[in-house]
Length: 494
Image 1 (cartoon, rainbow, N blue to C red):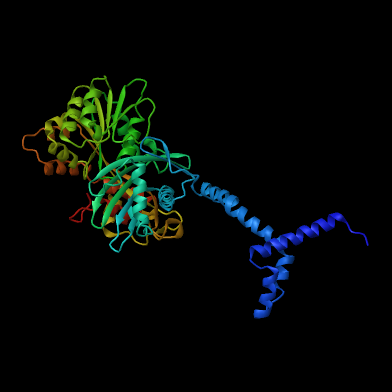
Image 2 (cartoon, one colour):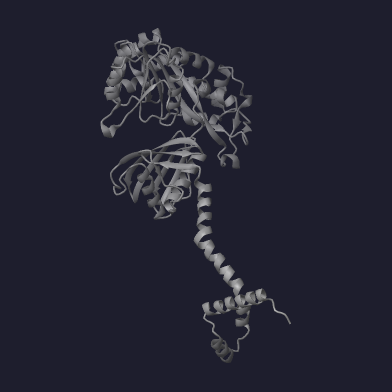
């Protein structure tokens, strides 16, 4: 009988592998006999001996998976999950890369990826009464609760946000401000962070800037044809003030940028003072306020006046010094475009007089006031026709000759998260300071109530619900939503 030496070598190697496996499991031939005598078990060792090489192969594969392949798989999985977000700290340096395997950092990225995906404008972290951290998004102006973060994880996520924003993570009682940025799906997003001590822990608010849709032009914002014509004419003026008023989150900055982009930069020197710069506009000198470094609106405005500007854009008039310098600049041959917090167009006069500006100066400088609100858009998938027009709206539709057949109501579906709304649309009123209103403002005993009565007589004050009625007639928003954004304490529309 002939024996192939290769076969013999392979059989011997197979036997040695089996013996090695038996040795690894601590099963020597002497122990086999002892086990057989003690408990009657036999045969298993022979199976181990026979299938030893297979066992070694499986063991080697497992070790290779745990030491090499698993790490590669985890990195690939993390890159697929977080490849769409790159965090940049307050100095613009990359932070929390793909190799940062930390549950708090993963939760940090998940939260802000989801917030940007859903078009949230703010993210709120609050200490929960039962422990942990409550998480909420502001979507379309409405707070939406998210799954809370468990105790420990919430505090670590807050620390991760504060590290990115350049804030002191050890200080949890005193208010702090910071900022960081990110690239999310190739789109730059800036984050403003504010922290403060609260009962049960620390509260953190993060504002997302630039996470929404692409910047809109003045034509796309939603003005009526008459309003658009007035605004485009106003930015061609050589002096005066154009003011945009409204509550926080009402889209004032979007309108402000739309106005600036309608200026001919080749003919006019435009300087913008913002806090912070939310969008870079080519052709405009944009300056950023930095309160920590002592760089204020008033200080930058004084400096801007020495640079021979034609148009000065102010992110906001928020203090007496800025208001008075802005009015003075408008009286000396500069066009000032700014936002200001106010309840309505007429209330803007009261706000500015409260900042020390005389009504006579306002009469001489203010050219137009735009008051705006943001109404939630009805979901296109689930909106339904409104069966009957509410009584309070019938007169408005009839007087303004608006066809109510297209008015719809919110229903709710998976597409809109059950809210019935998706996205927002702007609603405007405009008050033009012409010669008649200017004469009224220059009266000796003029009051805010008299100015309001004068504006109401001319239909300026009622244009916000009228514009809202037109949006509702086109099926863009609902009448309930217009009621929500225009309701005052006495139940009338503002």
